[in-house]
Length: 249
Image 1 (cartoon, helix red, strand yellow):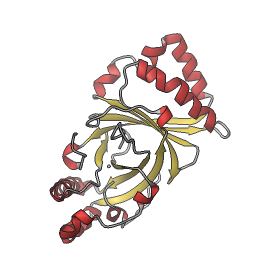
Image 2 (cartoon, helix red, strand yellow):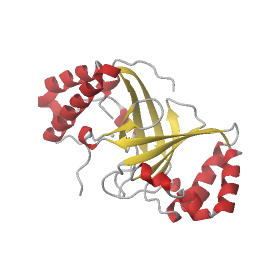
Image 3 (tube, rainbow, N blue to C red):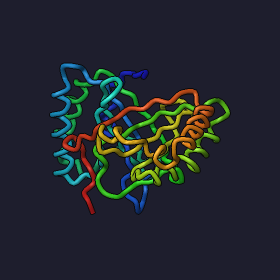
Image 4 (spheres, rainbow, N blue to C red):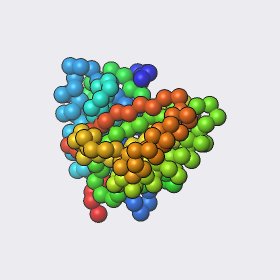
């Protein structure tokens, strides 16, 4: 993963990785910031995030985010936020944080001191290829990065909508999403996410294999392989104590 240092990235507001939030009004724009932390500042980062989440909750801020830690691949922290409109990505002051501006600025400075490098990706959730449950996000997600072959992007998106999503649903998955990269990554890159209870889920047959059966599953793998340059999966664990999540209805 290529990461570029951006000293001001946290001043944009720590962003809410991965499941859709509200079933009634699904946000379709997702902003993800992936952080590499200084090895000796991980505990400091966690402490600051706890304080930040507590302060936002105290003030009644509605700028929600979730924090996730990679359980595979390079150690990184993902902070994710969903948006209804592109204009919401514009940096602006939160009116509800006006009286806490000094305290928040200090937290931002402390957090920046813990960050070695960062990368921001903005993608767009494809609702006709995704499904979500209401309520709290799952404790783990399997995040996928699929890179389509030149000229095969639309075919890959069609397969994810018409074949992958129905099979995932039949296989018992309740949180599944497909997002197309819009900014910060290749235009032929697709992101997927699947809710998990933990590593133990991998001891069972995959939802796709369970839904399709062995023979059809192998045909599915062959078809998907013919549409992609590469596929990469990472497991992330939710850090609820570091997150500022929307209260349950």
